[in-house]
Image 1 (cartoon, rainbow over the protein chains, first blue to last red):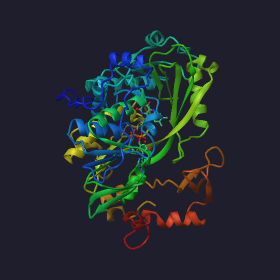
Image 2 (cartoon, rainbow over the protein chains, first blue to last red):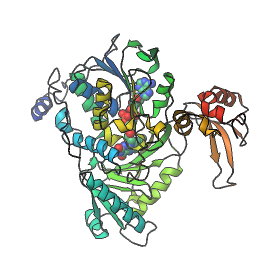
Image 3 (cartoon, helix red, strand yellow):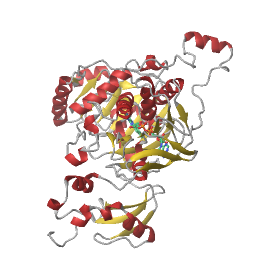
Length: 432
Length: 93
Ligand SMILES: Cc1cc2nc3c(=O)[nH]c(=O)nc-3n(C[C@H](O)[C@H](O)[C@H](O)COP(=O)(O)OP(=O)(O)OC[C@H]3O[C@@H](n4cnc5c(N)ncnc54)[C@H](O)[C@@H]3O)c2cc1C
């Protein structure tokens, strides 16, 4: 995946914002942390912008940041109906990796991973990116064979990936149950050492602060209720804070994408489904990597606070209620307790759901539409957090240039007409 | 409904039938299967925000409740080429 170096747009946080540093920490400690500057302004909408991004999740904020920093489009706004990162960005289990099977997926997820590496420096914000490794385990001979095939394909794309045998796993993850007589014994696995986790809220806040610093208006508590067009061109958006004139609109609203699309008379191949996660009470460090299992559909990591973070599969029915059904977490917890018996002693503190935008081929949509100036970035479903920087980077490029670059091109809506799907079901490793 | 006369509609119209989804926040028409019971398929009118089940009805029938009827009639699918090609008639088997 060698290629031209990425324009990371590093010119942020030099303007009005004071830089965070060890000196600023010491200085603010002496005034009892009462005088920290605001991380971003509470902007009110202007009558007109060069572009408007709908959705203040990680993907929308990253898009705004790269529009401003790489493409010099600073007269833009991000419109968020709730609070920044209150959608799936703040609800996910934060697993980051780029070990996907297909070339198109490898290109975009690796683009993102390269941006993750160094993102904290770019943004001058501690996003707590931790390359602790992501280990996907196999529970059958067949799964193991399929895994090694996948590892070779991934390596051909220049992405780090290796097969681990049971002995290596036992050493790498001392707390895992290696008993071969359990229902789903651990028979091997594959590891991406460069994978890991990041602090989800910090990603949204870091992008927001850096974008604001370049003059981007970030408008919260403002819902988009209509898209206005004249003929085949977008001319503005209707919001709960009034009408905003603009000729470019980027929709990045995850589970609400179909609703936005319907406002413009467009139908998407998306179904909105609940996806659930839960965290335990905090305990001392026991797990210093991320474990995921495709067969039992469970993934687990330990947060820096010490909580065990557990995620499950998607519920099978459509919903906008941001909560899921009981059987899904029950099934996941049964599998988790078998693999990590010590979990049975832990109390679970919080449990929640997010509404994910699932696509028929389990790949995202990054696309122009039939309406000039209207762009969609959605369909990331259960696994878009890891793509946040890469998604924002290529989407900003699409909006600024009005044509997709090589990484974004395969993700156009037209694939649902041509049949050139990017079928990542199963191929992806697991849903995340 | 699957278009019977596939050859009479374009790739884009078939793609629309195959891939594009009704995905409303509110009243939604869907098909369920009683997997651990009688294994029969049936139709359901459900609210995707409140999770209220408004009505169930047999395969091949159309909804009877006011909300279900409105959702059925107002769906953009009623006006698609694929739906027209699904009706038995001239050129269609
Ligand atoms: C439980 C769970 C676990 C997950 N685990 C992982 C994981 O481990 N790894 C991974 O890579 N991915 C994971 N994901 C998926 C990941 O969270 C998403 O793909 C990603 O965060 C989507 O980011 P986004 O910015 O596109 O969407 P969001 O963060 O959902 O942002 C969309 C925003 O749009 C706003 N909005 C909606 N409608 C309107 C409107 N009309 N007007 C204005 N604003 C509007 C919403 O309020 C929301 O804030 C998980 C998701 C869930 C729910």
